[in-house]
Length: 81
Image (tube, rainbow, N blue to C red; front, side):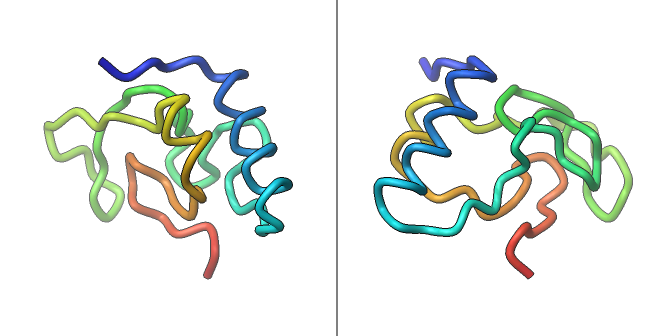
């Protein structure tokens, strides 16, 4: 089961970007500027500004530690456009 801890994930993504010499696209506080949900927690799935009735998983500590975050898992807004 994925582990969700906001500050741990924020730190993990910052370290991943620094250690791999990658740009840090994810919001530094974890809050998506488009849908106002925390990307590092499960939330509501939005499509084109409307809640579509489904839950979205969020970005786990493991994923933040091992993958470059380039967009919101809830509203699908890209952070690297």
